Amino acid sequence: MRIAIVGGTGSEGRGMALRWARTGHAVSIGSRDAERARACAAELSAAGGAPVAGATNADAVRDADAVVLSVPYAAHAATLEELRAVLSRHLHPRRAMLTVPA
Image (tube, rainbow, N blue to C red):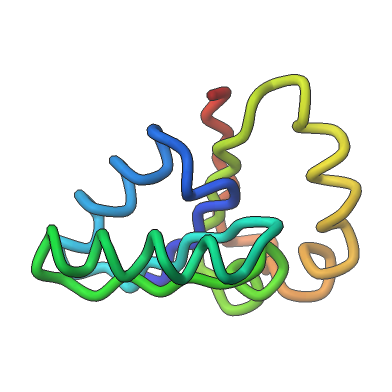
């Protein structure tokens, strides 16, 4: 399964990314800052022995089967608004979106 974690550079996102990657899922962590996401993904890949990709939030969710929103609750509305277009185009109705208030 391809899993995108929006806000994946935070504590909760990092923990989920590491565990899902170790079980064989293709994980991409997203951030507003793509370089930060790539650096975090490289760190997680090295620590976990399984590849994790890093990208902008929008790029991370583009091909995901499941999307996890892992940002502070106060940022949910703004983050979802920012991702509205890409989610409406790329998140199939049979795919899952989960929220994990950080």
